[in-house]
Length: 303
Image (tube, rainbow, N blue to C red; front, side):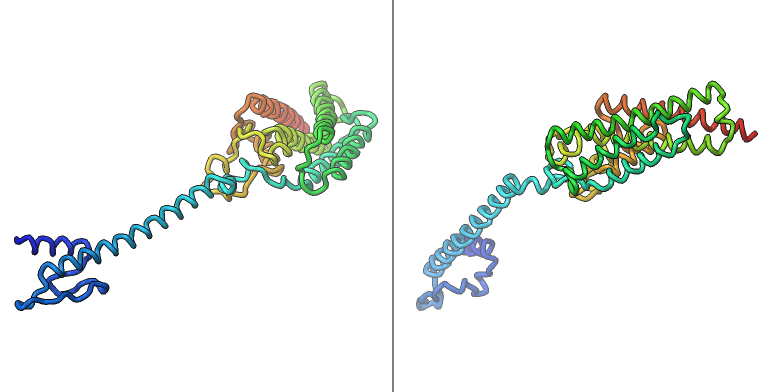
């Protein structure tokens, strides 16, 4: 192959234009032909100049693309990066107050209807204290639980502690009465109703403990202070299958408490920290003892 043919082949490969067909870039001037009818070296020089011009334009476009890519990467790694994180790992507006408030009111109602033999005297004292504390919390933080004040944290923990003491007293009195065979538990109906009230209150109380201490509590979770969870919910293990705005709320901890009280073991939510494991162990033991004794006594009475 001659030198001119080789150069024509190279130019065709770069531009996608078949020089032999007479096609040249639109901005290449028509060369003056010699007496043989061919442009000769003038055609080659004109095509090379046009190629340099087109390559320069393409390099400018590539530079623009690279600059746009760098700006996109900067946005992702800068201020906007947090929006790509799941909600439970970044600051949010906090969860709603009303679900936990309704749960506490329901627990107070259950404590008020338990029979007199298992209630702490006076029967209205501890439920009344819980109601007052709940009103204070709702007035101070009515909509979203995100205000970070020490007295609010202490008030919330005292509320859960008082509810725990009241229900623990009733559960202990019930178990003691069943073991001693007291006459007030000779009817299966009241026995099952009392056992159910104590068991349901136990579920709510432990849900409140889980909710209060997981990653520092609801306010700490709203401000994303602790990245390492005490409980791993399914949405955390499989973030690609859940909404990026999901974060654990009281309903999730109530479900955790209910399943632990019925299955006596973790189900779909795993405890990571030692306090979480010990608390779930305690709840399972209390639930197992209460259910086993109440059902055994009720079956014995019905027979």
